Image (tube, rainbow, N blue to C red; front, side, top):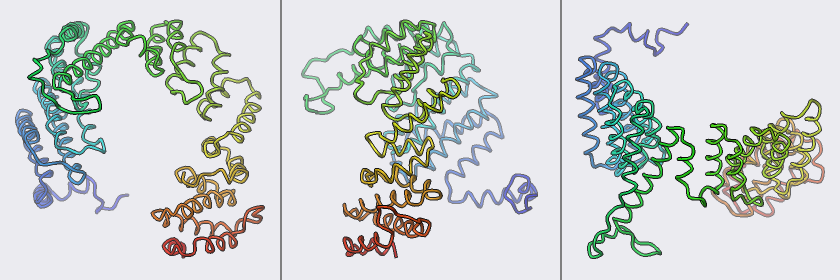
Amino acid sequence: MASKSTLNAKNLETLGAARLADLLIEISTGSAVAKRRLRLELAGAQSPKEAGREVAKRLTSIARARSFVNWQNRKPLVTDLQSQLRAIKEQIAPADPVEALALTWRFLQVATPLFERCDDSSGMVIGVFHDACALLGEIALAAGTPPEALADAAIEALRDNGYGQYDGLIAILTPALGAEGLGHLKQRIEVLAATPVPVPPKTEWEAVGYGLGGATYVHQMQERARQSLVRMALKDIADAMGDVDAFIAQYDPATRKVPKIAAEIAARLLATGRAGDALGFVERAEVDKSRWMPHEWQDARLEVLEALDRNDEAQAFRWACFERDLSPDYLRAFLKRLPDFEDIDAEDRAMAYAMAYPVALSALQFLLCWPALDRAAQLVQQRFTELDGNHYEILTPAAEVLAARFPLAATLALRAMIDFTLNAGKSSRYQHAGRHLAECDALASQIEDFGTFEPHAAYVALLRRDHGRKASFWGHFA
């Protein structure tokens, strides 16, 4: 049973309304975010209309503000935005979806002036606007907005999508738009497609930037934005209408051969039962088989082959995908489709292939992920000189995983990082290298035989001989 002093709603209720009110006033003193939240709750308690006024007032304030939002004050801004959006969804939409829809559009319009003064390197702020965009679909359906009016609003929104706040808008609004709204939206976009941005007299050209190709002008930027909007919108409308051919038509023949684009087209053709056409796009894709291949294209090819009952081809391709980059997912899919007992021999063959893979660290990463820790330990010992100690993101977890059962392999993974750090003079990593050496010290007592490798004491002696003057490193070890 929880203590009566535990912070939960039931225990707080025992304080009574008056005491809680005093505490909230005290806690909110000096906190603008807390005060705004309380005012919003009070407005909502009066009526959804009052809550709407409070939200509208705050959105106007945010849009008009000029102070820069950096990483230090970004979190309060996000909390504030989330509070406004929550009020729209929970306090206003159930009672007045029409007003809630208008406020959600207004919320999203705040994005452009806000991002002009905001550092959103974390993606936290745009995440709130994506939540708002998703909410549009729910509220628009409840509000019963006329489809043509909703389509017109969507067009205006997409024109102002410079920060990606309206990404996915057409798909989100599709249930509310229906066939009538989508048809109207398509007509509007087709008109836009046939209406290029006018080119002003050359004496009126306004430069907005300069590059190797010379100046870029305002009308050129506007024309590029128009073309981008048309392509994106027509693709999304085609998807919403289930018109695969219209989707394909938005790509020129050369672009259709880009592996990721070919995979997108193939997925849509498969969904409509056109596996043969899907295979054509997949096979025509320009894939350099001597280099890395996009997983999207590989997955699409496998799905198409299976849809055509070309299962032997699909299995051969899965194995080839595994061999290319040691993908555990493709190997598991390959083994899953083998008859009983054949999978054991195939797994042994895969492990042997991994052990001999040209890139030792890639092989180690695969063996740890599979997992095959005994083979991973064996690989570390056999190919120690090939381990690049600069890749601590692989070797650190390798040492941690191997330490319990394979202390020698764990020690060698740690030594690879220590040697690289000291030999390269990476002073910023001396603290980590010192900790790694201390871990080697702790593991030494568990190692009965170091084989061809120096015992721990001898290894430390070599480090003192070669790097004895690196006091900052030794300070972390001591």
